[in-house]
Image 1 (cartoon, rainbow, N blue to C red):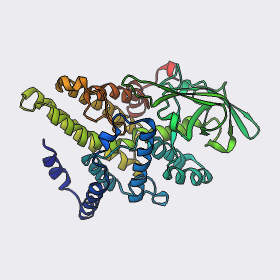
Image 2: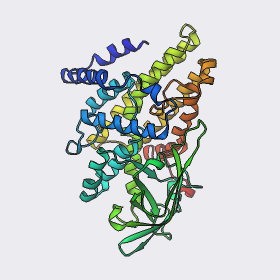
Image 3: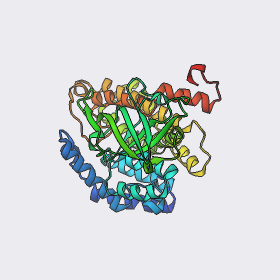
Image 4: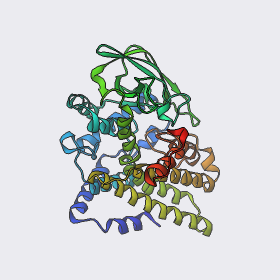
Length: 401
């Protein structure tokens, strides 16, 4: 179960073109990934974090690696096989994660590409490549994963909508330039029928962002208060009252394409940290590690299959939820095990790099943070409901209609 053996076994199936691409990515990683980024990002200020994230995004963009999943005409165009190679190498070389750009390059871009107008795409996709930062305004107090239960309202007045309400758990909201916003435009319609989807300029008067300090001391979660905020009707995505359908494209990106990279990071960096901190001569520990390796292999293969199916137009209605559920709960089990076998050091490490994911090797902090993955973007219970109803065809509870 060594990293070298795994690389040799898995990468032996590269086609000649993939092998050539892998060598070019490896050479780029050696030349461009800052070797001291973890030390520099541990204890970094918010300003240092933002500056580093923007410079790293620009570095990836210059190489054509920032948005490999986008269509070629917008700056992407790598095949699924090439994306897998890219994410494998970035993870193996311990590259920083694009935390700040995450919503923009995945959620905002997928929404614009699926449901945006040509003007909206031309306005925002190049801007995202230039560093425009996005936040997702979906969750609300007392609604949480019940997305259809949102109570933020948008009232049309001529060419604008006047929005009032509150959003919660808006990751990175204090740094965001734009927001993907869901609001209720028809209060009398059934829960899923009267919602509209907007693009909100975060500098608009009436927008108030307040950071929330979480259990490990980070403040990337935010509350967003909206008081008589005016949004131009031109910033409506899709048609009025059809925002629920548009939101599924956003959530599909979060639970689908994004998992391709996250699975590779968990399978490379996360498993490497776990091996390094575990007493592998203990047969019980070795057995658990073998089980994790099997699950990671399955996760990575599943992610690749789902993305390939999505590109071919043959993805199942519950495929993205299966991936999200599998990844988030495997992440939680792995970080829990790391905290269990890591000894005293795992419980006294009180800082982690701000540009890393939840596979940093600071096991107690990683484990606490892993709970975020089983709640946002649709809690595990929601994913199981989707899998049951859409994947297995089970009847819906009357109260959920």
